[in-house]
Length: 135
Ligand code: THU
Image (tube, rainbow, N blue to C red):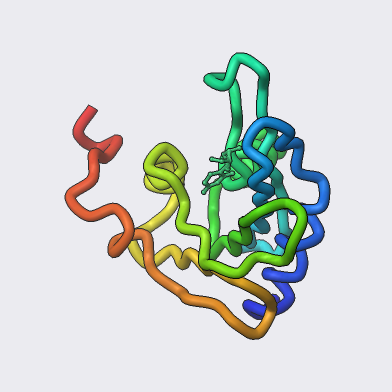
């Protein structure tokens, strides 16, 4: 699956965002090495802390279905009532979840739409990170 197709899947997932508190809707689409794709949206909570980001929703869906080998993830986010007009970088917690399962060359595609996006590796987004090999 190419980057544009993955972004389209993330945009579709964004439509399912449950974000009544922030009004910031995020979608993600995670490509596994076997070619399967898991999508996710942010799911907020009135107690705020239980909120789950779109990226982690996608990862947890995938891992809970037996997937552990990943290639890249597309992320789209912004004000829920319009199309994304900025690139949405993953939060630090989501970066650490990526670190648990992904190699340094794992790609994070931050997109405004299927034709306008930035790609960065996990190594760039989470340098000097804590690793499970240190536990
Ligand atoms: N959010 C994500 O889903 N992913 C990110 O990478 C950044 C933030 C969500 C969490 C919350 O529901 C809303 O965006 C505003 O922070």
